[in-house]
Length: 247
Image 1 (cartoon, one colour):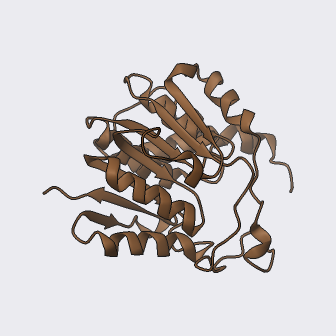
Image 2: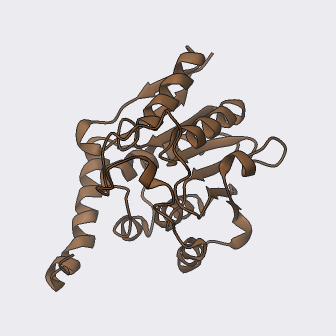
């Protein structure tokens, strides 16, 4: 990879601020300002600026609801730090779920749609995207987020996300698990514990593995009328929003 020119590095944070302000003006006028936000957005890895704005909009729309905030799929913790910064003025806790051992073995419902690493098959992605479990803690410490305000659940999600020990209730969740089985498990849990006006953002919908879209579509089919599925504007990336319908 060619190193960025120094002037490019200097320009990037102002460009993030410019994009943030434009999107906030045009699409997310109800999103409040938050100190440190654009600095953290400039450090995002794998999450685009437009997607981050959608995530923050859904997060803030849910903060008036009871419950904590969850991130399923932490990786390096750049998005974790962004979420933590937004809730620092509340009493909500941040629940962080990741195996920290890379992607699990794909299921038959995970067919390779977009070969992002050029590996040639879905099976070869097992173990990819592995991250150091200490990295996210450094990022949270750098923004001064109190350790007692977050909980780390390391391991496969079907083992770590269980009734009686998981968050209850949940006001907002960001799901970035890539594969069918962990996404389906997380959505099933969230259906039982999401607040009445809570929302879920699922990353990689109809991208990379077919598993994410399949898990979401099956979830919506089995809970007809309970959730609204919202897709972003085409430039924002590959994700979807699930909002609980009011009854």
